[in-house]
Image (cartoon, rainbow, N blue to C red; front, side, top):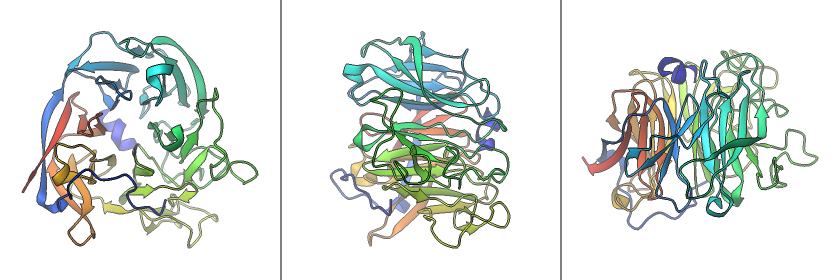
Length: 380
């Protein structure tokens, strides 16, 4: 994941119902991009409060910008640049609104502080206001003392109203401290916490809650740098950035999954190169898709399942993702026989920082040139 910001700055089937109409074979679909929002600086994520037409964009330096009808409002929704350390791959990395934001006014951000600790912090805004209260409160912090890369930092609310948090393995090359496989470390994980009980509580159904050995916050382990993930129904779709050979997409709905790093890079056995005596021959959840470095590819950017209505016949249930370095965009779905297929659908030609989805289920691409693009689809 060092490449993403340093350069530019469970066994599950789809559980959410597909929109009306059967999706076309992804190999028969091409993607086009149209400018939706311009004039941003380092846009690393975009989301919206439930039931709200506004879009909220996080800028790496520490600002959240409000977008109305494609226009970026001049005054930031929140400015925490004084708290944020954007060295290396640091910065303001994640934003999520509580499902009851329209009544609670609560939202959460993830950022790296002066010590490169990943912090999740809670804030409040009047639900209809374009400006938040700048006074927040810490929720959870994950020390990251040695390196300035691999922070993860994605936030999203999922089933049960729990907050999911991605964390990188601590950085460096090859997870030198073995954090991803260490269930007593919060690094290299997907965490799941209950933020309705400040600062947070461990859900009792988490796989390592209670007497089970391991940190109770952990939902999944064995991740290198889950830079961007998304939730579709009960499924987490994770784009986990590889070391030097493979990039992977993981999908799972149940907790306790071990995605393999630093014993596996995708399905490649890398135990002798990076792992330790803790590496086993079995017990890892394989990615649903992986690709080797080539054609300029270097770092996967996890995306979203299409759940809009405008292109439901072509795209319903199809997953969109890309690569930071090459700017290539792929579609992952099924052919007429139900077999999983992946197809190259577009070459953006620039650096992809993230994907996003609006309330209508339409998907956007956030680029290092400060522009957010709307994706559209057509038959080849």
